[in-house]
Length: 236
Image (cartoon, rainbow, N blue to C red):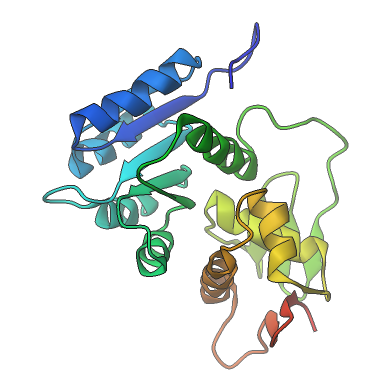
């Protein structure tokens, strides 16, 4: 994933209390022309994000004092920077916990460099970070009180902006672009996350749940409908 002449440099913060693992990731990303900073603790990571405003955070879960889950939750209070979580456990419960804490993706240790690079490309693409293709900006999509702007990568509900992470927005945009259509989970995964996520159907469930919490109001008609065995639908 090298960068050509004049390319925008992507900045990455690598957070892990395990120095050899942290150096392994940083060294391999640095060799591919990423700008890499490092942090050994959750508190240090939060300070670095405020100071450096990186394009991506790679965050280990198992850290003392402030683990990756809590670090990510605190990070989401002030930043929508994409986060890839590293975990040595890797069962569905741990992945769900990572995504629920605000992470955009989860990578199980041990992993290869090419797998890490593929996850980075996928997350940066969803976040609309440097390297997105230029073209005619698409029109806003309006449904009831919800307005989704693919060009601005923002959404509003009743005139107030909805606070969304990059992946939350990518999921909402996909359903909005397929308004009133029931979309199978596999199609959402392929469009939003890309190749290699075919078995990660829980990603869709988690993100639709998070979107419902942000755009649906108690006592009002829901924006998302569930077609059991088929998928979710945005719209009536």
